Length: 290
Length: 290
Image 1 (cartoon, rainbow over the protein chains, first blue to last red):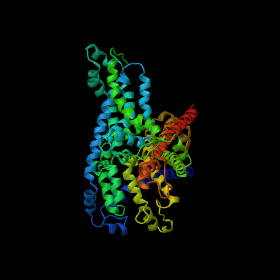
Image 2 (image 1 turned 135 degrees about the vertical axis):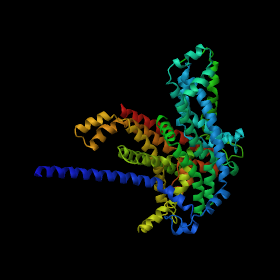
Image 3 (image 1 turned 120 degrees about the vertical axis):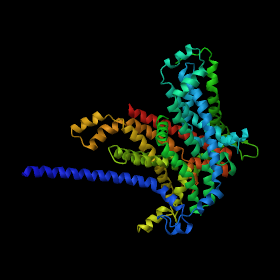
Image 4 (image 1 turned 45 degrees about the vertical axis):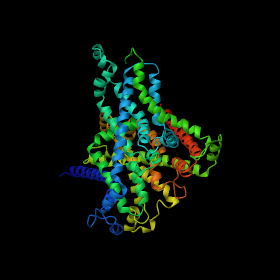
């Protein structure tokens, strides 16, 4: 081997090991990020299976024997089942109303020319800027006047109203992208605008509808502040409200709190893992476009 | 775009959405303007007091403290979430094993309900049983243990860390998908010219996703202005108002102090403050863009 090949060999070796160090560093950082993201949740789930005593002795390890009494306690005392049902009910009803009226309005905003169309569209979209918390007090007063306080209607209407801007935004921009010719033959055949909406435009908008539905549902499912202000009856509480109250009452029983949280968390994470692509699309699109 | 012969049909399509949106999103803002000029405890007769509520709010030390904390949350979010998310996205934007895994875990906190996150982190910060203090003790740094949420010096820091943790994933994914759009031909050309990765990042990658970065900053500001749930559940503004933000203070004054007029005045200020901040940032960022 001549001297020069040894020299080049050395360089490439150096370069390779430098590259390896770089790659390992990248992996290390990404793993660190993953641990920071996932460990708090893992910590909570692990400890929800421990007795209070074991938790205070050994908060980091796996449970010695897996105890389910925390779950029984959380389920029984915290009414998780009823909160779950309430959240599902309010979330789905609000979502259906919002998608129906939103899609209908978007169809006219996207496919027809009329005076004030742009102003109307802008008026809807500017709702994205309305800070929810600035409306808590007036919403309380309004609901009191309407007699909706302490009913699910008090949640359904605000949920619809605050999801309409993003829903109309997503659907209108999607529906505007279809070529004009889409409806023309249908019009020739004498189809009215409602028929065209129902059998042509709505089915074509499926991808945008999916995004809007997921966004609506996640927003409603996680919503806390309206529920806090407008619902004052444990039997009507949604999950976030019920959980917050439960955790407030059982401040010292950590393992039961963790069990309650885990019960709520597992369906969310499963839903996320199954629908990851749509959820991520929905939330980032909704965010960036909004 | 089509013209309809019967314009009333458009009204039929748009009005349902418009009515719900008006009553439950726009009207409350005006209601809060009206009630902000009143003194009312929710039961007895209202009294018109003119601008007295505003005068009082503007001299209220705790209110200004809450404004300061609101600004701190915005700053922590913008300077925490955006750079961390960008750095991680740049690291992951290459052929890497397990990229999907890192993405999935990275986005996970974003879908978890804020209430669950708040209660979990409240336990993580717990002075006796919390993960952080236990961890510090386990690695022999017990001297650094703090009563994180119970100590006014640390409470705001602790809250901001949780807020950053919650939303890094959102911007991480937004940046990752933006990075996919950077044209690979340009990067390859730079490779041929012997550009280092750092040079490519600074001169090619960052400029081409600059718009998305700016949008994310605006998003981050408007999102962090909405902070209420997290602080309400974690600390309810305490200890000694050290984590009070405008929305928690408003809640406190209205529903604990039963001062609906005063609370409405704070609502009006939240509204004005949020809109002003969003307008200013969009304007500043637009100017840079040109």
